[in-house]
Image 1 (cartoon, rainbow, N blue to C red):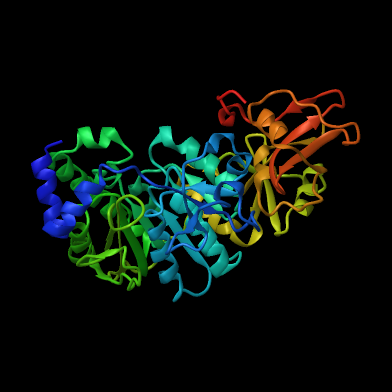
Image 2 (spheres, rainbow, N blue to C red):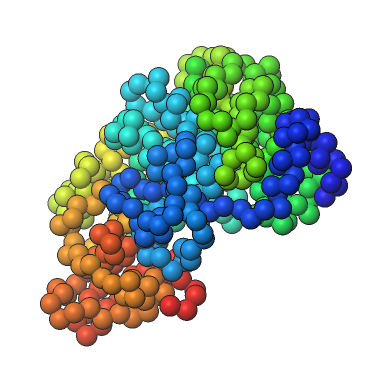
Length: 456
């Protein structure tokens, strides 16, 4: 990194005095924060019970006094909370402010979503604002990041979120489909210097220029998928004007939009020409920029998505899989994809089908499991879903060590009074997994890709 060039960019963005504060703060230790899952937790989890403070712009956000071992906390694996930087949660605050004026069913896209922090935050906000009447598409184009995104969405447990892996240009096939699009675009990563040494080594003025050009391509490609009058949230985790206010001005002038960033009452957020920047030394977390725009250019008639889903077929009307309908607290449409039964909320099934017919879809609704000898072998995603009824499967509360043994994918033994067959497991009243109890031992159904690798 060329320190002189970086310092100059900071001065251009914040002024000399603020730039000096940020530079000094980059040598300090980064903070740790989490965001609670309101669908799953009713009380404070262990990791935030002592010496934590609420994130000013996020009711469920907690800044921790020290970083615990999240890997060794069953509540983390059950989706009771998500580990997310407090500055990153500011994007969720802007999203909630924009929701205040939205009515009716909403279709929302998180375009560059991995690992899933902003997706899960928006899911909670949409659930509170819309009830069940929304669709949230969480997309990641990088194949090596899709798996963790799908896992985190499954842990969060909201059936109205679907995960896709498509290039931004592919969304144009849907026509003007989305009411709100979040573009948390890949950037030069200046705001992550305290957490990412590679970002420091790779930074240069040329890198900023490359990122700026790539961001414009992403924005232009996805623009046709936003409804006329729809909202675009633009965010980065960097500081410089070129990637932040400069790109917002480009959207405004080149794509056809007006800036509608809501006013912010928090002094930790630094007002810029079009949005807000959060930076170490002023905010408790890392670097984050966010602005909002309203699309003023109308493309005309919306194209309809094709009504089919590749590889998906209807199930038998009177088959055992229909029992799944009674498992959920929402009205479910059950279908089969490549041998796996999928439950999608009926009221958004048409929207889900429109997306799946045009884009590579990794998950939609709830992955329930597969049939073996006419009986359902439940998938862990079924157990993690927040809308699975309590009496759908026999459920027992376990101790921490049993939970960790399950998450390590060890063979576990339950008590003699536990019924045989498929049993859901809980810790601290939140479901985290499922086993097939054979009596003398259990078959562990925790996916290998999610297992804890540390010694437990």
